[in-house]
Length: 228
Image (cartoon, rainbow, N blue to C red; front, side, top):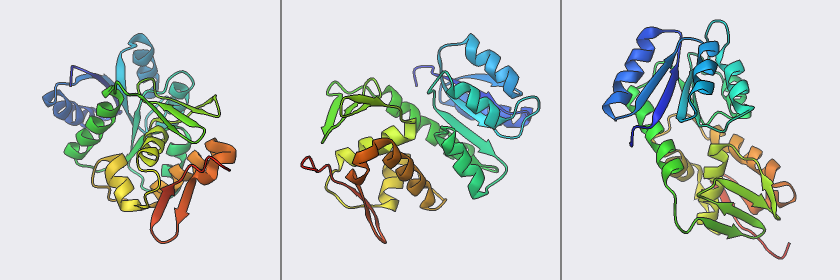
């Protein structure tokens, strides 16, 4: 993994050690923080952090507040850990720009697989990095999306979802297939995760939201009608 750095933020030292032990086995460099304030200090002190694992319930500065602060200055991928599994918590995480959401207790192997998937995508620079569909342009290497020549800010997962849609334009895609392909792991939640991301993606596409068409009872299809 080229010694990529992961910041693990959790007030439970046993949880940090558990996650760290699994990550070190995969040759990650692991930084630790016991609360949000310490996490922010380490994040600003080290510009090479590739991903953050962030617990929700912490003293001094909780995970939501920490995430808000990080997103003011960075798009670094964030995986949120929480003991809660309520839908509104998950939706709040996505609204704040969280890339993955994992409820405790969880399998460390699954967590590492999700980290691998995210960093494999962010580090996979394709020489043929420009993709176009209708008036949408994606620069895969720079992680930039433009709609009608204007740059649009997308979260990591929104970017990956849009890229997957464009790579499979004109093809009807089931929610299960989207989860397996974009999230790249066996997802044990429900399809609302995809629907939430599609809703946000459509809002950012503005007048071109209907590029993403709903196939009722199945999933979605991307169809960039350039004559619209």
